[in-house]
Length: 117
Ligand SMILES: [Zn+2]
Image (cartoon, rainbow, N blue to C red; front, side, top):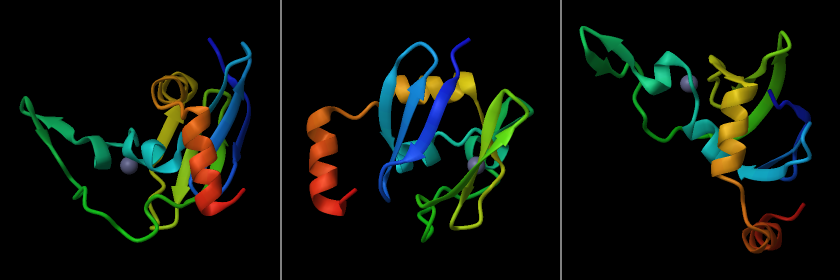
């Protein structure tokens, strides 16, 4: 299993990571938030139907990452500025997000031009 050697915010909107197998990838924090694996965000299966407990509406601060806290040695818990902190991302989940949402160099350059960092 791959695991991140580093996870750091490059600027206000980007999270960058280096992995044990050498993968270097950057993603938007909004993509990380969109992939929040908690029951509140993904909905729960009740009687065969997916029921959403929380509303997926935009909240101020929802894409602003406050902290990533290690959970055991298998993942991290994300705390967001809107107060949401129930999402625990395992290394496998994080890896899948970093692989599928990896920002191109051109996109990164564009973001850095707009927000700095
Ligand atoms: Zn969530």
